[in-house]
Length: 279
Length: 300
Image (cartoon, rainbow over all chains, first blue to last red; front, side):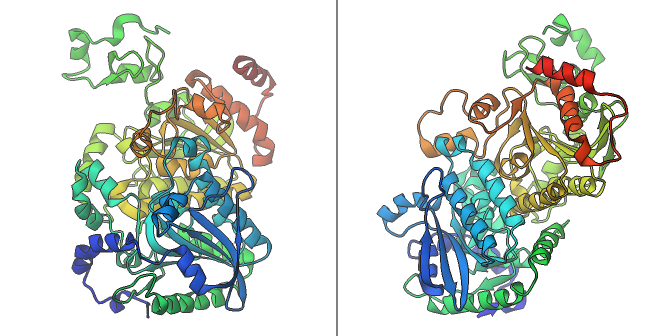
Protein backbone atom coordinates (compact mmCIF):
# COMPACT_ATOMS: atom_id res chain seq x y z
CA UNK A 1 0.00 0.00 0.00
CA UNK A 2 0.97 3.58 -0.53
CA UNK A 3 1.48 5.84 2.39
CA UNK A 4 -0.28 9.05 1.69
CA UNK A 5 0.67 10.83 4.86
CA UNK A 6 2.89 10.46 7.87
CA UNK A 7 0.26 8.87 10.06
CA UNK A 8 0.24 5.75 7.98
CA UNK A 9 3.91 5.20 8.76
CA UNK A 10 3.68 3.35 12.02
CA UNK A 11 6.81 4.74 13.54
CA UNK A 12 7.54 7.60 15.82
CA UNK A 13 10.33 9.87 14.62
CA UNK A 14 12.64 8.35 17.24
CA UNK A 15 12.13 4.85 15.99
CA UNK A 16 12.84 6.05 12.49
CA UNK A 17 16.09 7.53 13.67
CA UNK A 18 17.15 4.25 15.15
CA UNK A 19 16.31 2.65 11.86
CA UNK A 20 18.19 5.05 9.60
CA UNK A 21 21.25 2.83 9.47
CA UNK A 22 19.19 -0.34 8.90
CA UNK A 23 17.54 1.38 5.97
CA UNK A 24 20.87 2.40 4.50
CA UNK A 25 22.04 -1.21 4.80
CA UNK A 26 18.81 -2.45 3.21
CA UNK A 27 19.15 0.04 0.37
CA UNK A 28 22.53 -1.51 -0.46
CA UNK A 29 21.54 -5.19 -0.15
CA UNK A 30 22.78 -7.32 -2.99
CA UNK A 31 19.45 -8.93 -3.79
CA UNK A 32 17.47 -5.75 -3.61
CA UNK A 33 15.52 -5.14 -6.84
CA UNK A 34 17.43 -2.91 -9.22
CA UNK A 35 16.42 -0.80 -12.20
CA UNK A 36 16.42 -3.69 -14.67
CA UNK A 37 14.27 -5.80 -12.31
CA UNK A 38 11.70 -3.02 -12.07
CA UNK A 39 11.81 -2.40 -15.81
CA UNK A 40 11.03 -6.07 -16.47
CA UNK A 41 8.05 -6.00 -14.10
CA UNK A 42 6.59 -2.55 -14.66
CA UNK A 43 6.84 -2.20 -18.43
CA UNK A 44 6.43 -4.27 -21.56
CA UNK A 45 7.68 -4.01 -25.14
CA UNK A 46 10.94 -2.61 -23.85
CA UNK A 47 13.33 -1.22 -26.46
CA UNK A 48 16.67 -0.31 -24.93
CA UNK A 49 18.33 2.83 -26.25
CA UNK A 50 22.13 2.64 -26.21
CA UNK A 51 25.02 5.05 -26.24
CA UNK A 52 25.50 8.78 -25.91
CA UNK A 53 26.53 9.20 -29.60
CA UNK A 54 29.75 10.79 -28.50
CA UNK A 55 31.87 8.86 -26.03
CA UNK A 56 30.27 5.47 -25.59
CA UNK A 57 27.65 3.52 -23.69
CA UNK A 58 27.55 3.60 -19.91
CA UNK A 59 25.86 0.58 -18.39
CA UNK A 60 25.43 2.32 -15.06
CA UNK A 61 22.48 4.06 -16.72
CA UNK A 62 19.86 2.09 -18.64
CA UNK A 63 17.65 4.06 -21.02
CA UNK A 64 14.69 2.55 -22.81
CA UNK A 65 11.44 3.24 -24.58
CA UNK A 66 8.65 1.01 -23.31
CA UNK A 67 4.96 0.63 -22.66
CA UNK A 68 3.56 1.46 -19.27
CA UNK A 69 0.12 -0.12 -19.57
CA UNK A 70 -1.20 1.62 -22.69
CA UNK A 71 1.14 4.60 -22.59
CA UNK A 72 4.57 4.76 -24.28
CA UNK A 73 7.14 6.07 -21.81
CA UNK A 74 10.86 6.72 -21.61
CA UNK A 75 12.60 4.89 -18.79
CA UNK A 76 15.93 6.00 -17.32
CA UNK A 77 17.36 3.80 -14.59
CA UNK A 78 20.61 3.59 -12.70
CA UNK A 79 21.76 -0.01 -12.55
CA UNK A 80 24.28 -1.34 -10.02
CA UNK A 81 24.33 -4.99 -11.05
CA UNK A 82 23.71 -8.16 -9.05
CA UNK A 83 26.62 -10.43 -9.92
CA UNK A 84 30.23 -9.33 -9.61
CA UNK A 85 30.63 -9.40 -13.37
CA UNK A 86 27.53 -7.26 -13.88
CA UNK A 87 28.58 -4.93 -11.11
CA UNK A 88 31.89 -4.31 -12.78
CA UNK A 89 30.24 -3.72 -16.11
CA UNK A 90 27.88 -1.23 -14.45
CA UNK A 91 30.76 0.40 -12.56
CA UNK A 92 28.84 -0.42 -9.35
CA UNK A 93 26.10 1.96 -10.37
CA UNK A 94 28.36 5.01 -10.53
CA UNK A 95 27.61 6.74 -13.84
CA UNK A 96 30.25 8.45 -15.94
CA UNK A 97 29.58 11.54 -18.06
CA UNK A 98 28.61 9.32 -21.02
CA UNK A 99 25.81 7.85 -18.90
CA UNK A 100 24.32 11.26 -18.15
CA UNK A 101 24.77 12.22 -21.78
CA UNK A 102 22.85 9.13 -22.84
CA UNK A 103 20.18 10.01 -20.32
CA UNK A 104 19.92 13.54 -21.73
CA UNK A 105 19.48 12.05 -25.17
CA UNK A 106 16.61 9.95 -23.87
CA UNK A 107 15.07 12.98 -22.16
CA UNK A 108 15.12 15.07 -25.33
CA UNK A 109 13.53 12.26 -27.31
CA UNK A 110 10.85 11.89 -24.66
CA UNK A 111 10.10 15.58 -24.97
CA UNK A 112 9.99 15.40 -28.75
CA UNK A 113 7.46 12.57 -28.73
CA UNK A 114 5.57 13.75 -25.64
CA UNK A 115 6.40 10.59 -23.74
CA UNK A 116 6.34 10.74 -19.95
CA UNK A 117 9.68 9.92 -18.31
CA UNK A 118 10.08 7.45 -15.44
CA UNK A 119 13.43 7.64 -13.63
CA UNK A 120 14.66 4.87 -11.35
CA UNK A 121 17.33 6.27 -9.05
CA UNK A 122 19.90 3.94 -7.50
CA UNK A 123 23.50 5.08 -7.23
CA UNK A 124 26.10 5.56 -4.51
CA UNK A 125 27.05 8.70 -6.47
CA UNK A 126 28.37 9.84 -9.82
CA UNK A 127 31.76 8.30 -10.53
CA UNK A 128 34.78 10.13 -9.08
CA UNK A 129 37.70 9.53 -11.41
CA UNK A 130 40.29 11.33 -13.48
CA UNK A 131 38.61 10.50 -16.79
CA UNK A 132 35.17 11.49 -15.49
CA UNK A 133 36.58 14.86 -14.40
CA UNK A 134 38.36 15.36 -17.72
CA UNK A 135 35.08 14.82 -19.55
CA UNK A 136 33.37 17.38 -17.32
CA UNK A 137 31.36 15.27 -14.86
CA UNK A 138 30.17 18.38 -13.00
CA UNK A 139 29.28 20.22 -16.18
CA UNK A 140 27.29 17.29 -17.53
CA UNK A 141 25.30 16.82 -14.33
CA UNK A 142 24.58 20.56 -14.43
CA UNK A 143 23.36 20.24 -18.01
CA UNK A 144 21.30 17.20 -17.09
CA UNK A 145 19.62 19.19 -14.32
CA UNK A 146 18.94 22.04 -16.73
CA UNK A 147 17.44 19.60 -19.22
CA UNK A 148 15.13 18.12 -16.59
CA UNK A 149 14.19 21.57 -15.30
CA UNK A 150 12.87 22.67 -18.68
CA UNK A 151 11.58 19.35 -20.05
CA UNK A 152 8.11 19.77 -21.52
CA UNK A 153 6.86 16.32 -20.61
CA UNK A 154 5.93 14.70 -17.28
CA UNK A 155 8.79 13.31 -15.18
CA UNK A 156 8.32 10.87 -12.31
CA UNK A 157 11.35 9.79 -10.28
CA UNK A 158 11.47 6.81 -7.97
CA UNK A 159 14.38 6.34 -5.59
CA UNK A 160 14.61 2.56 -5.45
CA UNK A 161 17.82 2.12 -3.47
CA UNK A 162 20.67 4.52 -2.93
CA UNK A 163 20.09 8.19 -3.64
CA UNK A 164 23.73 9.21 -3.45
CA UNK A 165 24.34 12.96 -3.75
CA UNK A 166 24.60 14.86 -7.05
CA UNK A 167 24.67 11.69 -9.13
CA UNK A 168 21.21 10.79 -7.85
CA UNK A 169 19.89 14.34 -7.76
CA UNK A 170 20.54 14.63 -11.50
CA UNK A 171 17.61 12.24 -12.04
CA UNK A 172 15.43 13.62 -9.25
CA UNK A 173 14.33 17.01 -10.56
CA UNK A 174 10.86 15.65 -11.26
CA UNK A 175 7.18 16.47 -11.10
CA UNK A 176 6.72 13.63 -8.61
CA UNK A 177 9.34 12.13 -6.35
CA UNK A 178 8.64 8.68 -4.93
CA UNK A 179 10.81 6.73 -2.50
CA UNK A 180 10.88 3.09 -1.55
CA UNK A 181 10.57 2.56 2.19
CA UNK A 182 14.16 1.32 2.51
CA UNK A 183 15.86 3.71 0.17
CA UNK A 184 17.82 6.77 1.16
CA UNK A 185 18.54 10.14 -0.40
CA UNK A 186 21.48 12.08 0.95
CA UNK A 187 23.89 14.90 0.26
CA UNK A 188 26.80 12.60 1.15
CA UNK A 189 27.19 8.96 2.13
CA UNK A 190 26.94 8.37 5.89
CA UNK A 191 30.53 7.09 5.81
CA UNK A 192 31.71 10.22 4.03
CA UNK A 193 29.92 12.50 6.47
CA UNK A 194 31.33 10.56 9.42
CA UNK A 195 34.90 10.78 8.20
CA UNK A 196 34.66 14.51 7.47
CA UNK A 197 32.58 15.67 10.43
CA UNK A 198 33.53 13.22 13.14
CA UNK A 199 36.95 12.30 11.67
CA UNK A 200 35.92 8.68 12.12
CA UNK A 201 34.20 6.64 9.42
CA UNK A 202 32.98 4.14 12.01
CA UNK A 203 30.58 6.85 13.14
CA UNK A 204 28.56 6.24 9.96
CA UNK A 205 25.52 5.04 11.92
CA UNK A 206 25.45 8.27 13.88
CA UNK A 207 25.83 10.26 10.67
CA UNK A 208 23.04 8.30 8.95
CA UNK A 209 20.70 9.27 11.76
CA UNK A 210 21.73 12.94 11.69
CA UNK A 211 21.56 13.37 7.93
CA UNK A 212 17.77 12.71 7.90
CA UNK A 213 18.08 10.66 4.77
CA UNK A 214 15.22 8.15 5.08
CA UNK A 215 11.98 8.22 3.12
CA UNK A 216 10.03 9.04 6.29
CA UNK A 217 12.25 12.04 7.08
CA UNK A 218 12.07 13.37 3.56
CA UNK A 219 8.30 12.88 3.43
CA UNK A 220 8.01 15.03 6.54
CA UNK A 221 10.10 17.76 4.85
CA UNK A 222 7.74 17.65 1.88
CA UNK A 223 10.59 16.71 -0.44
CA UNK A 224 9.04 13.35 -1.31
CA UNK A 225 5.47 12.84 -2.53
CA UNK A 226 4.93 9.13 -1.93
CA UNK A 227 6.60 6.36 0.03
CA UNK A 228 6.14 2.78 -1.17
CA UNK A 229 6.03 0.14 1.52
CA UNK A 230 8.25 -2.89 1.24
CA UNK A 231 7.03 -6.25 2.54
CA UNK A 232 9.03 -8.46 4.90
CA UNK A 233 11.86 -10.16 3.00
CA UNK A 234 11.69 -7.70 0.10
CA UNK A 235 14.10 -8.76 -2.64
CA UNK A 236 14.23 -9.13 -6.39
CA UNK A 237 12.59 -12.52 -5.91
CA UNK A 238 9.83 -11.05 -3.77
CA UNK A 239 8.89 -7.68 -5.21
CA UNK A 240 5.50 -8.15 -6.86
CA UNK A 241 3.42 -6.48 -4.15
CA UNK A 242 5.58 -3.39 -4.15
CA UNK A 243 5.60 -3.32 -7.94
CA UNK A 244 1.80 -3.22 -7.88
CA UNK A 245 1.94 -0.27 -5.46
CA UNK A 246 4.42 1.53 -7.69
CA UNK A 247 2.25 0.82 -10.70
CA UNK A 248 -0.74 2.35 -8.94
CA UNK A 249 1.22 5.48 -7.96
CA UNK A 250 2.63 5.93 -11.47
CA UNK A 251 -0.80 5.41 -13.00
CA UNK A 252 -2.39 8.03 -10.75
CA UNK A 253 0.43 10.50 -11.30
CA UNK A 254 0.39 10.05 -15.08
CA UNK A 255 -3.36 10.47 -15.23
CA UNK A 256 -2.94 13.90 -13.63
CA UNK A 257 0.28 15.01 -15.26
CA UNK A 258 -0.56 14.08 -18.84
CA UNK A 259 -3.64 16.30 -18.73
CA UNK A 260 -1.62 19.41 -17.97
CA UNK A 261 -0.46 21.44 -21.02
CA UNK A 262 3.36 21.18 -21.38
CA UNK A 263 4.08 24.85 -20.59
CA UNK A 264 1.89 24.72 -17.52
CA UNK A 265 3.56 21.48 -16.46
CA UNK A 266 7.02 23.07 -16.57
CA UNK A 267 5.74 26.13 -14.73
CA UNK A 268 4.24 23.90 -12.02
CA UNK A 269 7.51 22.01 -11.67
CA UNK A 270 9.39 25.29 -11.31
CA UNK A 271 6.99 26.58 -8.69
CA UNK A 272 7.16 23.32 -6.77
CA UNK A 273 10.91 23.69 -6.30
CA UNK A 274 11.05 27.48 -6.03
CA UNK A 275 8.44 27.35 -3.28
CA UNK A 276 10.67 25.12 -1.18
CA UNK A 277 12.07 28.32 0.34
CA UNK A 278 13.08 28.34 4.00
CA UNK A 279 11.57 24.86 4.57
CA UNK B 1 54.68 42.24 -8.27
CA UNK B 2 56.34 43.46 -5.13
CA UNK B 3 53.60 45.88 -4.23
CA UNK B 4 54.66 47.10 -0.84
CA UNK B 5 58.00 45.55 -0.20
CA UNK B 6 58.76 44.21 3.21
CA UNK B 7 55.69 45.54 4.91
CA UNK B 8 53.79 42.32 4.54
CA UNK B 9 55.84 40.46 7.07
CA UNK B 10 54.66 41.47 10.49
CA UNK B 11 57.03 43.36 12.64
CA UNK B 12 56.16 43.83 16.27
CA UNK B 13 55.22 47.46 15.57
CA UNK B 14 52.73 46.45 12.97
CA UNK B 15 51.33 43.82 15.23
CA UNK B 16 50.72 46.60 17.74
CA UNK B 17 48.90 48.69 15.20
CA UNK B 18 46.79 45.80 14.04
CA UNK B 19 45.91 44.67 17.52
CA UNK B 20 47.33 41.83 19.52
CA UNK B 21 47.05 38.98 17.06
CA UNK B 22 46.55 39.89 13.46
CA UNK B 23 45.02 37.11 11.43
CA UNK B 24 47.70 35.46 9.36
CA UNK B 25 47.47 33.76 6.00
CA UNK B 26 50.01 31.48 4.41
CA UNK B 27 50.68 31.88 0.71
CA UNK B 28 50.01 28.69 -1.22
CA UNK B 29 52.75 29.60 -3.70
CA UNK B 30 55.77 30.72 -1.71
CA UNK B 31 54.60 29.53 1.74
CA UNK B 32 55.35 32.89 3.36
CA UNK B 33 53.08 33.97 6.17
CA UNK B 34 51.39 37.36 5.90
CA UNK B 35 48.85 39.53 7.68
CA UNK B 36 45.42 38.84 6.22
CA UNK B 37 44.23 42.47 6.21
CA UNK B 38 47.27 43.67 4.33
CA UNK B 39 47.04 40.88 1.78
CA UNK B 40 43.37 41.54 1.16
CA UNK B 41 43.99 45.27 0.77
CA UNK B 42 46.14 44.39 -2.24
CA UNK B 43 43.57 42.30 -4.13
CA UNK B 44 44.58 39.23 -2.10
CA UNK B 45 47.57 38.66 -4.34
CA UNK B 46 50.86 37.54 -2.83
CA UNK B 47 53.33 40.43 -3.25
CA UNK B 48 56.25 37.98 -3.32
CA UNK B 49 55.20 35.34 -5.80
CA UNK B 50 51.97 36.65 -7.36
CA UNK B 51 49.93 33.65 -6.21
CA UNK B 52 46.28 34.35 -5.52
CA UNK B 53 44.75 34.15 -2.09
CA UNK B 54 41.06 33.47 -1.78
CA UNK B 55 39.39 36.89 -1.89
CA UNK B 56 36.70 37.88 0.62
CA UNK B 57 33.35 38.69 -1.02
CA UNK B 58 33.12 42.37 -0.08
CA UNK B 59 36.70 43.03 -1.13
CA UNK B 60 36.00 41.39 -4.45
CA UNK B 61 32.88 43.47 -4.99
CA UNK B 62 34.86 46.65 -4.27
CA UNK B 63 37.42 45.78 -6.92
CA UNK B 64 34.86 44.76 -9.56
CA UNK B 65 31.94 47.18 -9.47
CA UNK B 66 31.76 50.96 -9.82
CA UNK B 67 32.53 52.62 -6.54
CA UNK B 68 29.42 53.08 -4.42
CA UNK B 69 27.13 51.36 -6.91
CA UNK B 70 26.62 48.10 -5.04
CA UNK B 71 23.29 47.63 -3.31
CA UNK B 72 23.09 44.44 -1.31
CA UNK B 73 19.87 42.47 -0.86
CA UNK B 74 19.08 39.87 1.78
CA UNK B 75 22.11 40.81 3.82
CA UNK B 76 20.72 39.41 7.04
CA UNK B 77 19.46 36.03 5.86
CA UNK B 78 20.73 33.56 8.45
CA UNK B 79 20.94 29.82 8.32
CA UNK B 80 18.73 27.93 10.66
CA UNK B 81 19.41 24.37 11.60
CA UNK B 82 16.68 22.46 9.75
CA UNK B 83 17.96 18.99 10.67
CA UNK B 84 19.02 19.88 14.23
CA UNK B 85 22.42 18.63 13.18
CA UNK B 86 24.82 18.19 16.10
CA UNK B 87 27.26 21.08 16.43
CA UNK B 88 25.91 22.97 13.42
CA UNK B 89 24.56 26.01 15.30
CA UNK B 90 27.84 26.55 17.11
CA UNK B 91 29.76 26.11 13.88
CA UNK B 92 27.64 28.73 12.10
CA UNK B 93 28.11 31.18 14.93
CA UNK B 94 31.86 30.80 15.02
CA UNK B 95 32.05 31.13 11.23
CA UNK B 96 29.99 34.29 11.46
CA UNK B 97 32.22 35.98 13.97
CA UNK B 98 35.38 34.80 12.19
CA UNK B 99 34.36 36.02 8.76
CA UNK B 100 32.09 38.98 9.57
CA UNK B 101 29.60 37.50 7.13
CA UNK B 102 26.10 36.21 7.73
CA UNK B 103 26.43 33.46 5.15
CA UNK B 104 28.61 32.16 2.34
CA UNK B 105 27.34 34.42 -0.43
CA UNK B 106 26.77 38.16 -0.90
CA UNK B 107 24.19 39.19 -3.52
CA UNK B 108 23.00 42.49 -4.91
CA UNK B 109 22.95 44.82 -7.86
CA UNK B 110 25.62 47.17 -9.11
CA UNK B 111 27.06 48.81 -12.17
CA UNK B 112 30.34 47.92 -13.85
CA UNK B 113 31.60 50.82 -15.98
CA UNK B 114 28.07 52.13 -16.00
CA UNK B 115 26.49 48.84 -17.06
CA UNK B 116 23.87 47.51 -14.71
CA UNK B 117 24.14 43.95 -13.49
CA UNK B 118 23.02 41.64 -10.75
CA UNK B 119 25.92 40.03 -8.94
CA UNK B 120 26.44 37.15 -6.51
CA UNK B 121 29.79 36.64 -4.85
CA UNK B 122 30.47 33.50 -2.84
CA UNK B 123 32.91 33.70 0.03
CA UNK B 124 35.05 30.70 0.80
CA UNK B 125 36.00 32.15 4.18
CA UNK B 126 32.53 31.22 5.40
CA UNK B 127 32.36 27.44 5.84
CA UNK B 128 34.33 27.03 2.61
CA UNK B 129 31.47 28.64 0.68
CA UNK B 130 29.39 25.51 1.13
CA UNK B 131 25.85 25.69 -0.20
CA UNK B 132 23.04 25.23 2.29
CA UNK B 133 19.48 26.48 2.14
CA UNK B 134 20.41 30.14 2.64
CA UNK B 135 23.17 30.22 0.03
CA UNK B 136 20.83 28.47 -2.40
CA UNK B 137 17.96 30.78 -1.58
CA UNK B 138 20.10 33.91 -2.00
CA UNK B 139 21.28 32.71 -5.42
CA UNK B 140 17.66 31.96 -6.36
CA UNK B 141 16.53 35.40 -5.15
CA UNK B 142 19.17 37.37 -6.99
CA UNK B 143 18.47 35.34 -10.13
CA UNK B 144 14.75 36.05 -9.85
CA UNK B 145 15.57 39.70 -9.21
CA UNK B 146 17.71 39.75 -12.36
CA UNK B 147 14.97 38.06 -14.39
CA UNK B 148 12.34 40.49 -13.16
CA UNK B 149 14.49 43.54 -13.82
CA UNK B 150 15.97 42.18 -17.05
CA UNK B 151 19.51 42.33 -15.75
CA UNK B 152 22.48 40.16 -16.60
CA UNK B 153 23.83 38.08 -13.74
CA UNK B 154 27.45 37.56 -12.71
CA UNK B 155 28.21 34.83 -10.20
CA UNK B 156 31.62 34.49 -8.58
CA UNK B 157 31.69 30.87 -7.50
CA UNK B 158 33.74 29.57 -4.57
CA UNK B 159 32.48 26.51 -2.82
CA UNK B 160 33.43 23.21 -1.31
CA UNK B 161 30.03 21.92 -2.48
CA UNK B 162 26.70 21.22 -0.87
CA UNK B 163 26.67 21.76 2.90
CA UNK B 164 26.51 18.44 4.72
CA UNK B 165 24.84 19.76 7.84
CA UNK B 166 21.64 20.58 5.98
CA UNK B 167 21.42 17.18 4.31
CA UNK B 168 19.20 16.72 1.31
CA UNK B 169 17.94 20.29 1.69
CA UNK B 170 21.39 21.45 0.57
CA UNK B 171 21.28 19.06 -2.36
CA UNK B 172 17.90 20.48 -3.39
CA UNK B 173 19.51 23.89 -3.84
CA UNK B 174 21.13 22.48 -6.97
CA UNK B 175 17.66 21.94 -8.44
CA UNK B 176 16.36 25.28 -7.22
CA UNK B 177 19.22 27.38 -8.56
CA UNK B 178 19.07 25.45 -11.84
CA UNK B 179 15.39 26.28 -12.23
CA UNK B 180 15.82 29.94 -11.35
CA UNK B 181 18.67 30.23 -13.87
CA UNK B 182 16.73 28.39 -16.57
CA UNK B 183 13.99 30.99 -16.19
CA UNK B 184 16.58 33.78 -16.40
CA UNK B 185 18.05 32.20 -19.52
CA UNK B 186 14.63 31.79 -21.13
CA UNK B 187 14.29 35.55 -21.03
CA UNK B 188 17.47 35.75 -23.15
CA UNK B 189 19.46 37.29 -20.34
CA UNK B 190 23.20 36.90 -19.88
CA UNK B 191 24.71 34.75 -17.13
CA UNK B 192 28.47 34.91 -16.57
CA UNK B 193 30.23 32.61 -14.13
CA UNK B 194 33.63 33.32 -12.67
CA UNK B 195 35.07 30.20 -11.08
CA UNK B 196 37.43 30.99 -8.24
CA UNK B 197 39.39 28.76 -5.91
CA UNK B 198 37.85 26.33 -5.03
CA UNK B 199 34.72 25.50 -7.06
CA UNK B 200 33.70 21.91 -6.45
CA UNK B 201 30.88 19.48 -5.71
CA UNK B 202 27.25 20.45 -5.94
CA UNK B 203 28.04 23.99 -7.04
CA UNK B 204 30.11 22.76 -10.00
CA UNK B 205 27.36 20.27 -10.81
CA UNK B 206 24.73 23.01 -10.94
CA UNK B 207 24.91 26.77 -11.47
CA UNK B 208 28.69 27.11 -11.78
CA UNK B 209 28.59 25.23 -15.07
CA UNK B 210 25.38 26.71 -16.46
CA UNK B 211 26.57 30.14 -17.53
CA UNK B 212 26.65 31.49 -21.06
CA UNK B 213 30.26 32.44 -20.45
CA UNK B 214 32.54 30.72 -17.96
CA UNK B 215 35.64 32.53 -16.75
CA UNK B 216 38.11 31.34 -14.15
CA UNK B 217 40.87 32.75 -12.00
CA UNK B 218 44.39 31.41 -12.57
CA UNK B 219 45.21 28.31 -10.59
CA UNK B 220 41.69 27.85 -9.22
CA UNK B 221 40.75 24.30 -8.26
CA UNK B 222 37.64 23.38 -10.24
CA UNK B 223 36.01 19.97 -10.25
CA UNK B 224 33.12 17.76 -9.30
CA UNK B 225 34.84 15.46 -6.84
CA UNK B 226 37.73 16.79 -4.77
CA UNK B 227 41.23 15.54 -5.64
CA UNK B 228 41.54 13.61 -2.36
CA UNK B 229 38.33 11.69 -3.00
CA UNK B 230 39.47 10.82 -6.50
CA UNK B 231 42.85 9.66 -5.27
CA UNK B 232 41.13 7.42 -2.74
CA UNK B 233 38.81 5.94 -5.36
CA UNK B 234 41.30 5.56 -8.15
CA UNK B 235 44.37 4.82 -6.09
CA UNK B 236 46.93 6.02 -8.58
CA UNK B 237 48.68 9.34 -8.92
CA UNK B 238 46.71 12.26 -10.27
CA UNK B 239 47.98 13.99 -13.41
CA UNK B 240 50.08 17.14 -13.13
CA UNK B 241 47.96 20.24 -12.63
CA UNK B 242 44.80 18.12 -12.38
CA UNK B 243 41.59 20.14 -11.86
CA UNK B 244 43.28 23.55 -12.08
CA UNK B 245 41.68 26.26 -14.18
CA UNK B 246 44.48 25.85 -16.74
CA UNK B 247 43.83 22.08 -16.95
CA UNK B 248 40.12 22.65 -17.57
CA UNK B 249 40.86 25.39 -20.08
CA UNK B 250 43.00 23.00 -22.11
CA UNK B 251 40.13 20.52 -22.13
CA UNK B 252 37.62 23.05 -23.39
CA UNK B 253 35.58 23.30 -20.21
CA UNK B 254 36.02 27.05 -19.61
CA UNK B 255 36.22 30.05 -21.92
CA UNK B 256 39.05 32.09 -20.50
CA UNK B 257 41.39 32.41 -17.56
CA UNK B 258 41.38 36.00 -16.37
CA UNK B 259 43.91 37.65 -14.08
CA UNK B 260 42.36 39.36 -11.09
CA UNK B 261 43.50 42.80 -12.24
CA UNK B 262 41.78 42.30 -15.62
CA UNK B 263 38.54 40.90 -14.26
CA UNK B 264 36.61 44.17 -14.07
CA UNK B 265 37.52 45.13 -17.64
CA UNK B 266 36.71 41.68 -18.98
CA UNK B 267 33.32 41.59 -17.28
CA UNK B 268 32.50 45.10 -18.49
CA UNK B 269 33.43 44.14 -22.04
CA UNK B 270 31.20 41.09 -21.90
CA UNK B 271 28.31 43.07 -20.43
CA UNK B 272 28.69 45.63 -23.20
CA UNK B 273 28.66 42.93 -25.87
CA UNK B 274 25.34 41.70 -24.53
CA UNK B 275 23.84 45.04 -23.51
CA UNK B 276 21.42 45.12 -26.44
CA UNK B 277 19.77 41.86 -25.51
CA UNK B 278 19.67 42.51 -21.79
CA UNK B 279 17.32 45.45 -21.87
CA UNK B 280 16.63 47.98 -24.52
CA UNK B 281 16.57 50.88 -22.12
CA UNK B 282 19.99 50.07 -20.73
CA UNK B 283 22.80 51.25 -22.90
CA UNK B 284 26.21 52.46 -21.85
CA UNK B 285 26.07 56.23 -21.54
CA UNK B 286 29.25 56.90 -23.46
CA UNK B 287 30.92 55.13 -26.29
CA UNK B 288 32.59 52.08 -24.86
CA UNK B 289 34.61 51.33 -27.94
CA UNK B 290 37.86 52.73 -26.61
CA UNK B 291 38.15 50.79 -23.41
CA UNK B 292 36.66 47.80 -25.13
CA UNK B 293 39.52 47.80 -27.65
CA UNK B 294 41.93 48.36 -24.86
CA UNK B 295 40.69 45.36 -22.90
CA UNK B 296 40.98 43.05 -25.86
CA UNK B 297 44.44 44.29 -26.70
CA UNK B 298 45.55 43.51 -23.19
CA UNK B 299 43.95 40.09 -23.09
CA UNK B 300 45.06 38.84 -26.46
